[in-house]
Length: 236
Image (cartoon, rainbow, N blue to C red; front, top):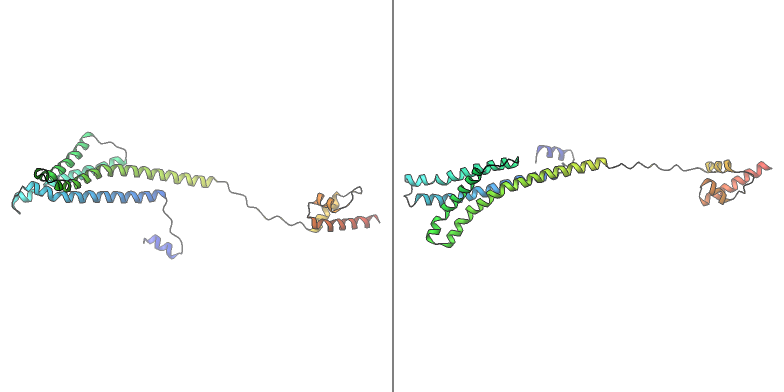
């Protein structure tokens, strides 16, 4: 757990959840590590086969036997340098020349031939398949790793744009006004409304009270009686 996450846990706060772009970035790093691990393991497997091919039965420990160990690393290091350079150029959209692709294919083809030569010469189908799989996996992974990283970079860019659009939509969303509770009108206020609009030609009734004041049916009878009492007293 990081120091930031520990501090957040100690304060009782929930650590921030990574956004879409951060999640894609994590996947890109994982894919990159897995592909490179597979390539390195494949090249390590081919090293012993190439050494045996180059030693050509020389006694173990002889100068030719030791020199045979240098052949595969020589080819593999060139291949790894090309693959690493292609990753960087692809990230920034820079196209490499024809010699770069030729060098990559030549090193892969050389590794394949040296791994399978003895198996083809002996006509042993199972050994041909066994020694063909690692170089072919390296070849396919070498072609795929650059394209995968490029596409995942585009996915990160798209995730950033989607996240920015979501934030913009949230900010632009209109805020509903806060509704305040309606003030309750008192009996005297209703009575005053009826008193203000009453004229001698008007017959006071609950229906008329409801019409001019907007009060409830139950309150209109009381208001009608109160106003009629006031008007009757005034006339008397």
